[in-house]
Image (cartoon, rainbow, N blue to C red; front, side, top):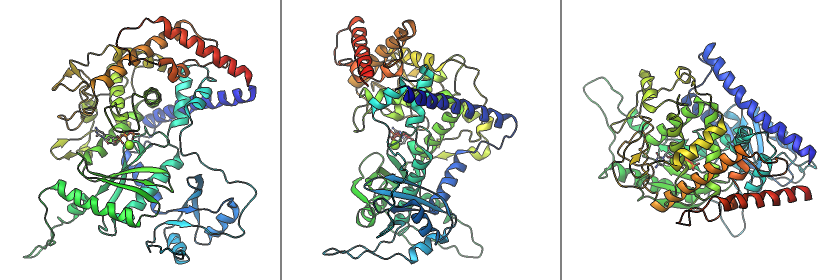
Length: 544
Ligand code: CTP
Ligand code: MG
């Protein structure tokens, strides 16, 4: 126990110092080298380029890493590689040059299968066959999913304080570099399928894969971009004539999107190696094709007409880089919401991660001094190159992170967390709507129980799906959590081998029945429940 304890404490301290170091570097970049902080677009571009040079290989059991690398190096220099498990061992291999992939392809054959026939779609997904290349040392496999909650709580309990716990949770939950590489690779593989019809189409990840709030295992949101094709077709020519393509016509852009997604969905279903469970959900407000990419272990949502969502992904990325406390707070609260069933993996009347994040941003804008700027302030900092009008909506905001001044607010993370619960435990949801553009409550324009204004399409409510009973549960849990946070700061618990701080907040059983019971409960029983839970944890801890 002692050794484990030491190593975990080291990890959590490192997590905190990484974050602080990151912030220090950010500050240094602002003072000395304004070019050091890359924009969202630059980061995306680099990831996309990497993905084009990358292949996915299904490896034989017990593959020998050395032999594996030697074999592939015949085709060219390898820039990076890693292994992970999803229906067997897989390797993501990035070559330095794209030509290496052609070389690999040229030596690859289509499989011959008995009693079946393989469809001859040649992608960048390969199966490596071997008779003799297995090794004694298992390859290091990179984790692609988050830790189970009980293991997470155990790790958190070894930290020194709530702040360290939050940074440790961030470090354990956030997408790793490897996971992001794999996600961009899948995006690039889907692009290859779309390119069969639309050679100039691009496919870009958006949502939590790129907005810096993605948790290991979260879904992969993909945007099929055909707009650039239209823009390029408007090139001027000289002479007495202009030419345009003869095309089919449909009644609206929505119908065009539905047609295209329907066909691409068919292609993914019929030819996409490893793509299973393809569902076309074309009548949704935002039509989409949902499928599972088995070799990557990812659930994917492919859409095509929601360019504004790309902007909100970039906006969240900007906020995520504004202040180091923000991502730790968002990951902590997303985890809290998930374990207590406030958010859910199933679509329905629940609050979504996106809505919850908007609520956290709004809360941080309302601090005094504010922790992050309002969207209008970010728009005020925007340069000419940042101007984006999409379907008549102004989606402009600054892209250069160096122009955003660091906050004067230095409140501790545990204070912000406790006050978040208090803020929403007492928020007048019946009257007010949440607006991150202004950073101020506005009157609710309609009766939805929870109204969070879409930052760009200001007549839309991001949380239109949420019903009154889900909102009531959120408020009840926020109140209970505010109380637990207060209790913990006034009566610090014996920390060793016991759930404390975030550990207590994340124990599902502490909150049993909250939000289900209508009548007001006394505070006493919760503290009894915590006490008995802590006692049982102590006993378990000793037994180890
Ligand atoms: N989005 C939006 N309005 C909504 C829901 C979603 O603009 N009502 C956009 C946001 O940019 C969001 C993206 O669509 O980031 C993807 O939605 P979703 O997958 O629901 O959220 P994520 O942010 O990806 O979070 P999660 O990890 O839960 O998938
Ligand atoms: Mg998502």
